[in-house]
Image (tube, rainbow, N blue to C red; front, side):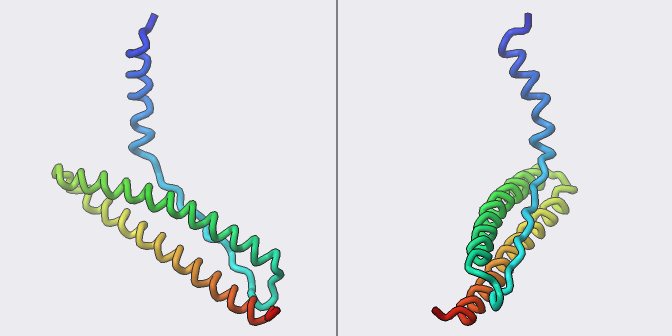
Length: 120
């Protein structure tokens, strides 16, 4: 019978490639309601969507950051192809930050329009 240490070693070896090849899941940006015509319920739902997107985007950024750290280590170890992978990960990171900023800007614009259309 296989002892526990051997079983864990085999399990660890089988799981290692999955962790190395783990892809970061890009969150989908929520749609923004038209603040001029949206109801309060639509605005509250949109706010929830924005908060959920921000949480998912924070996880995505952490994942991409982990990739960048790994690629930086590979660069330091002399892996010439790691530089390109690092640059791609950095571009993904920057794009995700820009997407989140745009979602916030769009939602804030909708809030201002909603408040202007519903002054009470």
